[in-house]
Picture 1 (cartoon, rainbow, N blue to C red):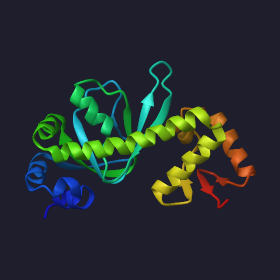
Picture 2 (cartoon, rainbow, N blue to C red):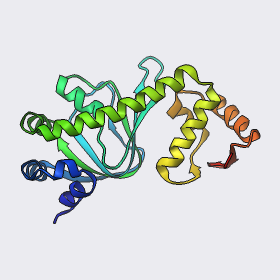
Picture 3 (spheres, one colour):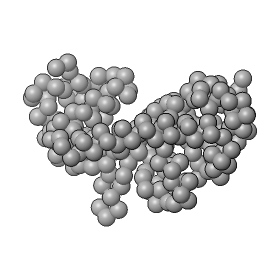
Picture 4 (tube, helix red, strand yellow):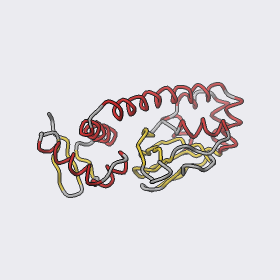
Length: 215
C-alpha cells in the first residue's frame, strides 16, 4: 500500500470505500509536504489544485482588497479540503478567499481539471463535498455570530479556545500580531484585550505564548 492510498483509507474513508473512485484518485494525485506560513491559495487567483489535508492545519481567510486586512473564516483539518476552492472551481471563477498553512502539513493534491472530471463521474465525490460544505457552513455561521453579536474580548477568547482545541494544547505559541492578523484587528487592540483577559483570569501571557486557564 503506497502513502497516498494509506492517507485516503485513513483520512478520507468515504472516498476510499468506492474502488473505482479510489483507483482514479491514486492515479492523478500527488503527496506534498508544505511548510507553515506557505500561502497555498491567493485571493483573486484561479484554482489550480484541490487539497486533501492529511496532517497539519490550514486556515482560510477573507482578505479586504483596499487595506489588506483579513478575517479568519474557517480551518482546514486532517480529513478535510477547502470547500470554497471546490465551489469556486465548479463556477470557473477566481478565488474569493486566501488559504495559508498554519502548521507544517502533508497534503494529497488533485489537479483542478481532474477534480472537475471526478465530480462529473462519481456521486460519492459530490457527497463528500456536500458534507464538507455543511460542516464549513456551520463554522461560518459561528464566525458571523461572533463578529456580529459578541464583544471583542469574547470573540478573542473563543478564537483562543478553538486554536487550543485544534492544536491539542492549552499553551499557544503565538504572537499578538499573529492573533491580530487572524482576527482582522490591530496588534494594539489585541494586546489590550489579551491583558484584560489575563486580569480576569482566563489566560496567562508570556513572551511568545498564551496559556488558557481553567475558569
